[in-house]
Length: 166
Image 1 (cartoon, rainbow, N blue to C red):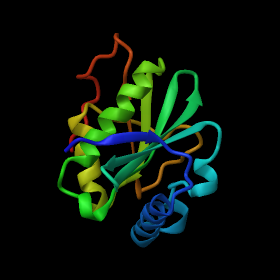
Image 2: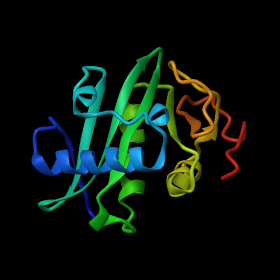
Image 3: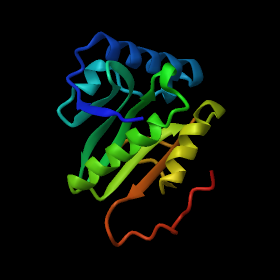
Image 4: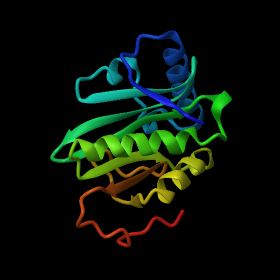
């Protein structure tokens, strides 16, 4: 699968539909106070860069990076379109976002994801790419419905510190 990544202006209806599906799933699997997915307005924040992933004319997935300052960036809105699941889109999107974060000089990529079984594939994907468990960050609080993870991009990081047991 060869994907084309576009720094997306969030104007296309197919992108809107994918994000609506994403938000619907988040609300279906987590209590409202534990849903941290960004809506269209929040994704348009200047601190957020959003990419869509395309195979030809088909939207296959999306993901975003939110600059938290101080060398940290948060991974947001990772989603694979239903028709593209099982084809490695999540892996390719994650690698793209990690490459961009590194090229921009970020030292850590942080994320929050769900603790429920629905999110197990996402947690395994992140763990396979070196993410480790961590405490809440950037205004998040401890929540039994959330798992917090990080990946250090700086060269001095020890990948064996706090390995993620997923």
